[in-house]
Image 1 (cartoon, one colour):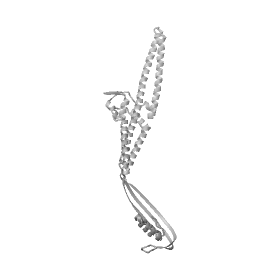
Image 2 (image 1 turned 120 degrees about the horizontal axis):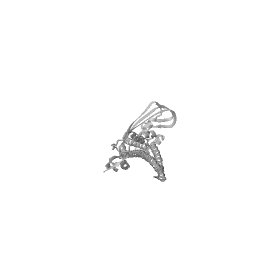
Image 3 (image 1 turned 30 degrees about the horizontal axis):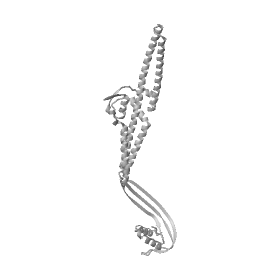
Image 4 (image 1 turned 90 degrees about the horizontal axis):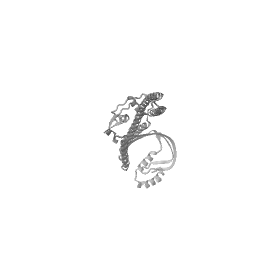
Amino acid sequence: MKKYLALSLLALFSFATGYAQIKVSASLQEAVYKAIAKNSSIKNKELEIEKLNLQEKSVWNKYIPTVEASALYSYFDNKLTVDFPATTLPIINNPLFDGKSTFDNYGNIFNGSLMVKTVLFSGMQIPNGAKALKQKAVGTEYLKESEKDGIIREVLNTFDQMALLKEVEKLINDSDKRLQTETKRVSKAIEQGLAIPYDRDKIKLAALELDSKRIELEGKRKLLYRKIRYLTGYSDSEINNVTYDLIPYLIAEEKLSTENKQEIKALESFKLANEYLLKKEKGTFLPTIGAFGGVTHSSLFDANATTPVITGIRCSAVFRFKRNDDKPKLDDWCRNEMGGICRF
């Protein structure tokens, strides 16, 4: 079964859904494109789609290894005078402090490090999150196309009404010509006694009704012009240059099924996006596996250090990796033999 539909509905499918079997004038196509480009809601949808695509890329980019680099430069110059009791290191029997001592230290220290990190397994949070954003972008695209359909339909319906007003204007002009002819006939009939003044009053009433229709027609035309200016940004002269004819077309009924509606497709995409989002949240219960590695370089150059810090550092490095149950003995030795200068 086929239905007769107006050109506006056919042009809607021609522009928006790819059926593109109906040819319209170039001026009318331009008006439709202007209306789509001017619509702020469609612009917002395009920005939203672009934002979702960027968010999807940023989620996938979490698999890309990240590199962190740092550098530190220090300069030291100090003169230190200390007065500790004379102390010697056990075993090697080396003196560490011998009464009052003065130390003069200066030099440059440079430290640089490079660290690489990457995600090996995210508990499926990254792929599911990216897929959710992808489906949301697809659904927003369908909504944008639906809004385009509405803009196209509104523009074409408005030009439909403009064309209908032209036909109504022709009908009013034809009625006015017939009324003038009838007025002459009735006037002659009254002069010849073949009609009564009441017939002339009926003609006056018909003339008033035509004037009322003409005023109503002009009001509707001004309203339609204002609507087209709002939709397309056209001036009155540009509106008048648009060529448009009321011609019926045939369209198959299967092409009008609800399965082709953009809103239904958008709803399915948003539903799928929520399913991926739910899977992403469930992925938080799974372990996250990553890998990292790095290298560090330290350098002491142009330095003069008379403070016996090397022995202290060596002592600290040895003790740092001792078992915890040895720590009380080390504390006692540090307090008794080293004067309490070691810290753990």
